[in-house]
Image (cartoon, rainbow, N blue to C red; front, side, top):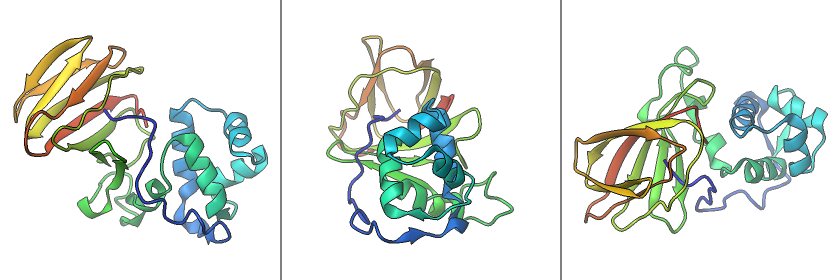
Length: 206
């Protein structure tokens, strides 16, 4: 689910282009995951971000310092806000980081002006699927879109209108669904309380 042109709120750290991130944060692996999901080559991402291919390769392998200004450029090209890399599962204990996501360590994204927020429930985007928890405020609408793959989900709170290839389905708490992501689809919250949806998307789409 979710709009893939992400404009997260609170452009924090955008002015701190002179500071550098700790290479121990292992942000490079997350950049590599997102690049592959977006089907971008090293060359394409490096050119779009205005950096050298060799430097990007070092960043992805956590072998080079990563200034905030460079991360901002990479984030813009990859379609995520910088807080994607800071709010993630990197805070988890090393022996569970690739298996478990603790509630306090979920990566969160907010869609400015749309009333939709998403939390990544899967430990990373390197596997075959993506698990998300979406919170859709009353009156919020995702707009129509499509992409490769398949998705399924269950509404765990509130009400949800779901359109698949123009057909509207009205979902109540506990209802689930599945469809090909290549179909034009859209969802909206017609209720008076936030709707919460758990989505499974394969392959990962962020």
